[in-house]
Structures are given as C-alpha cells and as structure tokens.
Image (tube, rainbow over all chains, first blue to last red; front, side, top):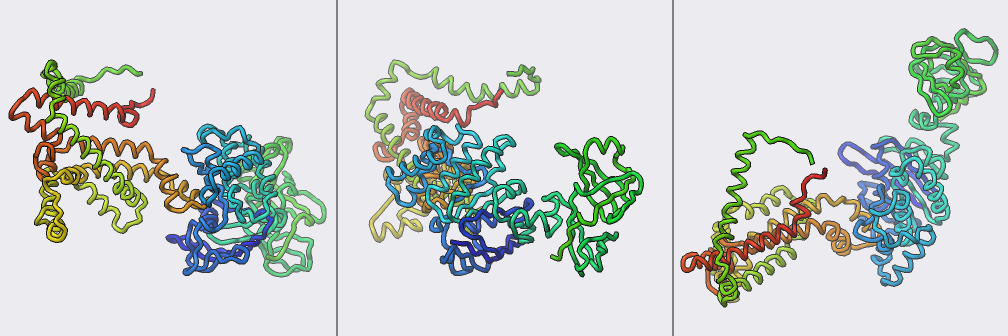
Length: 350
Length: 263
C-alpha cells in the first residue's frame, strides 16, 4: 500500500500545500522548523483535519477528496502516536491498549488478549495494571505505540515521538522505536524537528518549510545536496549559491570560488563541509586552493570541536579543534584567511 | 507554614466578616430545642417535607445531568453558533432573583402560559402547583450550576484525548462516555453536588411556581418558612437539618474548594 497526498489547506494566513507519495514498508520523516505545518500534515493524514482541495489516497482507497469525500479517523485504519502520547489517564495501561480493539467491536476478552500480546511484544507486560501517571516517559512512548498498533493499522503516524524525552532515555527509546517501526509492514510517517531522529530512523525525509515541501530524499541525498539553507544548516554544511562558468563559481552576494566541475554552467548550489575549511593568520600559498579573507563573527563550542562563523565573501562556518583555536589565538573580530581545496567544493544544479 | 503578622486594617474588617457569617449559624445551633428535636424531625409533616425535598432535588439533579452535561460539552467545544451569547443565556437563571424565575416559569408553563397553555388545552397537562412543578422550578434554578462547572471541566480537557479515541476507532458516543466524561469526573461531581445543594435549598421559584401545599409542593425550605409563623422551634429544628446537609456538601467538596495552597 502507498499513500498519495496531493492537497492544500488554509488556516488563517497559513497555507499547507503538499504533493508527495509515501511507499509501504518505508519510514518517512517529515522534518521542518516549528510552524512549518508538520503536525497539521499528520492530522490531515489521520483524518482529524479537513483539506480545502486535492485528494489523499491510501492504497486504492480515496480517503479524502475535497469537498465531497472525507473518511473519518475511525474508518481510516490509521494508528497515531500523539505528541505527549495522549494516553487516557483514567484507564490502566492494558485498558488503554484494549480501547482500540474494543472500539472496533472486539469482545472484552479478545481486546484483553490483543493488549496482552502488544504488551509482550514491546516487553512491558509488568506495566499492564499501572496508570499512565505511574509510568516513565519512555514507557509512555511504548504504551502509546502499543495502543496505536493494537488496531492493526495500515498507516502508522507519529507526532514528535521522541520530543518529550530527556537526552538519556531518548537514545534507548529511539533504538527501540526503530526496531518496531522497521518491522511495521505499512506506511510509517513521523514528524520531527530533530534532524538526528530523521537521519537515524527514516528511509526518506520530507523537508517542510512554511507549509511547502522544499526537498525530499534519503538522508544521505539531503546531506550531499541540500536544497535550502534550512537543510544545509540541519546537515551542518555551508550552502553557497552562485553562477558557474568555466570552472569558476561567481557567488551570489560576492566572491569567486574555483570548482572542479568545469562543465557546470548557470545557477548552481555548492556544498562546502565545515571540516574541509582551514583557517590561517597569514595568506596561505599553494595550488588548487580557494583562499579568501574574513572576520570571525562567532565561536561556538561543540562537543569536541569549535564552530567558527566567519563573515566573508562567501560567509562560511568552519569547524576547528580546540588546539587550533588556542594556537591561532582566534577570537571574535579576528581577521583571518579562509582556505578550501577546490575538490572539497561540491557544486550541483538544483 | 509561614507566620505573618496581619496588619490591623485588614485583620479587623476580616474578623468582622467572619463573625457576621458565623454568629447566625452558632445562634441557630444554640437555639435548637434538643429535647424536642427527634420528635419534630420524625413528625409526619417534617418527614413528608424531607421526603419531598429529597425526591425533587434528586429528580432536578438527574434532569440537569441528562440535559446539562451535553449542553456543557456543546458550550465548551463551541460547536454551536453564538456560543458566547448562549453561555450568557445559560447563566441568567443563576443571577435572576428566584421569585422572578418563578414568575417567568408561570408565564411559560402556566395554564395560560406560552407553552403551558398549549399543553393544558390539548393534553390537559398542568405543571404549576404540582410536585412536577417543584422539580421544574428547582431544575431551572439549579441546572446552570452544573453547566457552568462542567463547561470549565470540558474546556480544560485537551482535544487530543478525543482525537486519540477517534483514531482508535471509537464513535462519538463512545468517545463522550468512555473518554470525555470520565476525564472530567471531578468537575462533574462538583457540578452535580453544587446543583443538588442549590436544588435542595430552592425556595423562591418553587413557592411562586408550585405554591406551598404540604405533601405536594411543600419542600423543607418551604416548611421552615411556614413553621416560622406557627412554631418557631420546628422552624429551627428543620433549619438545622438543612444546615447539616450544607456542611455535608462542603465536606464532600473539600478536595476542590477547601484545599489551601501547598507549602
């Protein structure tokens, strides 16, 4: 089964405009900044939000075709893991999981058996009688997943599944979650604002910015060829826009760089990885190098390196070791030479 | 607990307020004819009034639950047009002098009333001066308490629980009864108790719309009022019973209204 989504939806002065396909057996991440419409997209797929135009098809079943067809959430065969899980606080863990099967007409006993099986497969049988208020965040996430899977949905939708967790539990829950969603045979779509979750869990990533899809691809495609500044920032690379001609890149906003692809012509994007940049106090010599001058705007410590933001033409971010910062006596305002080997600049047409 | 010296300009008026509220209750208890109390309370008139009070107040609370709980949900979810106006209309009986409510009910449901006239002419149904009339009057006055309390409960219930239930395949009836109502249970209980307490104490609308007939429409508050003109000690004894009920309500609601701030 696959999902075809081609629709628009307007709320106030925000418009969500989607055109994409999600294949069965794949995990798709919807990645975007806050307010980009990620959660709204998920609500639309779940049937909790009406679209204004277009259609949504699950397999060979049209679930939305504005304005005439709208299959209610009850009849969509979707499982949803809500942000903060939305477990029913007045029901035990087992009753939460049995709620779906009971709603779909299973007897009490059948529903209880489904709940028990789900609890077993997620390894949380001991939580069965507890209330949602008596379990941890990581356990809550598993219960929410078990509840969503208990109705045997065709589509599994997860809204920020790891956002409510602290950094430590996040790692283990992510591994756990990965195992379960990779085993799921239907379509999995999850929404996140964390690029790490998207990179680690998803086969395919949809980038949503301000209501529109700006890029789709595998995580490695996005890292190699980010189409927007947002994606480049997420991937931690420098994105340079310019006009290529005869092995030279005339950068928009000033500056010229040599690139290795002499055949590229016209408007292009170029990726320059921060670790491929070297900084010097005096003008470096050598061939096949781009060298330009700049001023340090900011120094941001990361876990084992320091990010150096440099005002230059083009402006770039470099990552250097703590030792280099000490050796070169780098500080904000320091005038610096930036160099990057021609081969490290990967230019491509959009 | 932090010990703080209260400034006199707050302490004195505050204590006056306290005395003003408490002294009448102490006087009532002090004046209670304790030897005669069991006899008065077990007299047929008193028992009849008590029975009628319990019957009508519970019936009114039941009606308020059946119709008021759905109305509270409709207001909270703003599914009807002009929700603000509707909410104001629901609150009006709360602020209206009860006697005015009684007159309004007579004009609506009396034998020559807007709706009551039709019912009397066609089906020979009359409400005023009947026990059902008492139930109608008390429901009219007490239901807003339930609606307003519960609307707050439904409003603070996040939509995502109902959404989650919908994606799990629950129809709207199941969502309402298995998710929404249980989740607002504290507000629902508080609303029902407040509603019942108001119904039990109802006087003005009842005497106006249903009159004061022993055994038919004479509830406890009406019996107190009547006894005051004949036998003061009976009035005091019956009042004490109502006071005990009020204290009972307070104890039942202590979780919600008597909690002081933590630490």
